[in-house]
Length: 179
Image (spheres, rainbow, N blue to C red):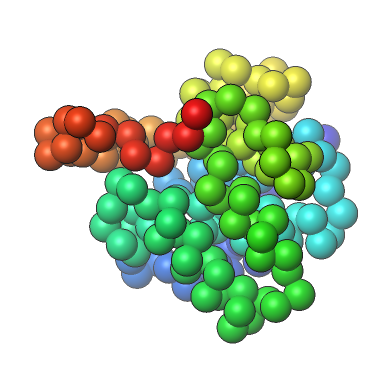
């Protein structure tokens, strides 16, 4: 499998948020596409499932920028729901919301739509943990994806946002994490 370097729907959604993403646009886009690649490796999704994953990924962290918060899962999910209601009512909004709400879950997802939700959760962890954990995605594929879609400062931005939250709310440094 060759790395997927673009996805029309994902890129379109990210372009809609380009002004708020600002200098982080490339970093967030590359993160979303890396996660999309790891997701597709695990699932071999059909076109409709790819659309669900692309929408989930475009919105999964977007609340960081659109709402200026490190507690971004609910704002991200709300923005996704609004977009789906206005532009893609054929999508399973419950599935996409579960993908967003559970993508930082530390333990495996055991709820509805386990396959796609768990695959997206694992794919995000692969990227956030610098591909040290592979969840069955081949190491050579992970290396190819990272080479084709460089970090562009994404992980550094996560460090900055975590530090800012730690300084302002040390009792709740990672509110997006789920057990």
